[in-house]
Each structure stands twice: as structure tokens, then as C-alpha cells.
Length: 273
View 1: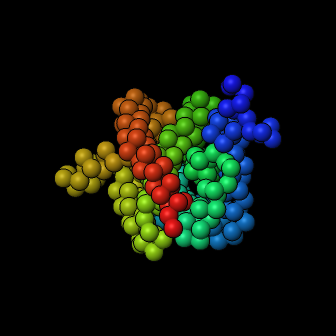
View 2: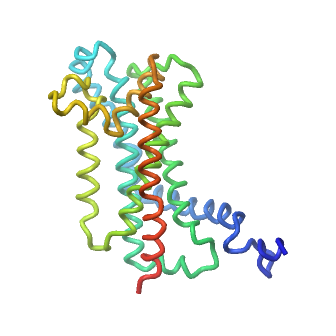
């Protein structure tokens, strides 16, 4: 009975099976990665621009941030650029999803004999791939300008881990918005505004106590700041428990709040006439 449920008459995995979900998610994730790499403009924006941004921050703001914090500025700017690249990369993926909805590609995928969750999962998997690649590149570049990770392999793994926690939660938020918004909706300005506000009001640029007193609780507790502080502590040494709890809470809250709207919105977008 189980074999009948898990396989089709042609011997392939049944559409709703875990085997189909895993295998088809991988195939569709490769499609997403191929689209991203072949689009030269997107590739430059997602890979080259973060590296140039990191170098620019070091050249333009390095001394000012260093004198304010008493620490090499790269310990703030490398984590900052990692998170910013994750956010703007997710925005690009969300725009692509919204466009594919408008062209009818989602509807065509939906009527194929594939797992219903595979395409949405593949988009998150492609985000994981991109975040890992960009994080590795930025850590490598950062190591040449002062970002020395003193905690060894465990600290490096921790930096990748919190970058993925932040990136996946933000990507889930973007996907939920992308499938819920109309193809003509001003998705780019909205998401760019959110990303820009988070980018400039965090502890990566300057210490929290350098902001106006009324703004400090917001800056200290918005999702980017504790993530940056965990990455800074993993690289340079220091306590991580309190900020790690904040990162975990933000990750659970964002994914928990956005996962169902993303799944429901994808279904409606793919089946809309």
C-alpha cells in the first residue's frame, strides 16, 4: 500500500511524496541558480557589488568607525555587508518571482506533475546557495583588510549559520510579499525602503549609544543589530548568548509569520486566471 502511495505507475515518486519534494526542489533550485548566474546584471549586483561596497566602507568610513568603536571597522562592516547583500539578493529573487507570476510561468509549473511545495522550496534553496557563496567571498576579502576570525573553524561556521538564519527569514518575508502582491505593485520601492532603513540604522556603522537616545532601543533590537553583534563576537571574541537569543527569536517570528502567507499566496498566484 505504501509503495503505491509513494510511486507513480511509471515508477517515479508520487507527486505528494517527500522523495518527490526533495528531488524536484533540487532540480528547480538549480534552475534558479542558473537563471541568476546567466543574468550578467543580476550576477554583478549580487556578487561584485557587495565586495566593492565592503572595500568602499573600509576606505571611506574605516578610520571614523574605528576611532568611535576602538575596534577595526571591518568587524562591523563585514557582517553588515553580508546581511545587506542577503537582503538585496532576496529582493531580486522576489522581483523575479513576481515577474514569473505575471508571465504565467507559475501557473505552468503548477499544472505539472511535481510536488506543490517544490518550486517555493527551490527558491529558498537558491537563496541559501547565494548567501553561502557571497558570505565566503566577503569573509575572504575582509580577511585582507583586517577581519581576522580568532575563534577558528567553529567561529567561521557560526558566522555562516547566523547569516543563513537572517537571510532565510528575510527571503521568506520577501517571497510572501512577492506572491501576494499584484505583478504591477510597487514591490521594488517597498522592499528597497525596508532594506535601506535596516541598513543604515544598525550597530554595524556605529555603536548603538552613538544614536539619539530615543532611537537606541530600536537600533539595538532590530533584526540586523543582534546578528551583526553575534558575527562580531564570533570573529573577535566576546559574549554571544544574549544577541543569539534575539537572532533566534527574530528568525522564528519572521518565518512563522510569513511561511503560511507564502504558501497560500503561491497557491493563489499559481492558480489565478
